Amino acid sequence: MMGRSFADPDWVESGGIAEGFDLLNVITRSLTNKVTRLVEADPLHFDVETSSSVRGYVIHMGETQRGDARPCFHVCSARAASDRQERSCDVSTDGAVSADGMVWRTYIHGLFDRAGFRRAWLNRIRLRRGLPPVDIERSERFTQRLSKELDRWADHLNNHLNVNLPFGRPS
Image 1 (tube, rainbow, N blue to C red):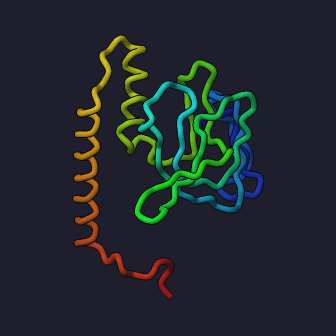
Image 2 (image 1 turned 90 degrees about the horizontal axis):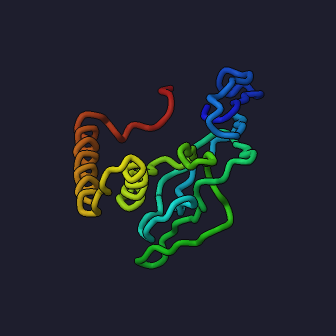
């Protein structure tokens, strides 16, 4: 919806073509197959520390033609090798960014989960507004607090829902 239009020719959702907000020169088309995968990616359009890669999951049922919009991320796949993480970068890219760098769209969910990228993103905005940057310790404390709250929520769900039920409709 951030692009020029969204087309659903196969009636995956409601069918037809919807006009977008035209914030980016992109056109998105719905597909019938859902793509889900874990990714690690490096931002392409602002100076960041080496710890500012993002890790998340891509989930979508469409393809976007970028037009003249630049991609946001260089996508690398993360995989475990023995007891350490190795990154195996490929040549794919993700997302689109406006010419002024103020509008980004991506298929990556969990974009702001890592403190390094979140801090770099927020500091970019803060510096444009004349505000002091957020220091790394404050960003790390936020990540720890968020992790504890998500664990607390998961424990609550585990205690009050039967998470071992089979997935799908009852027979």
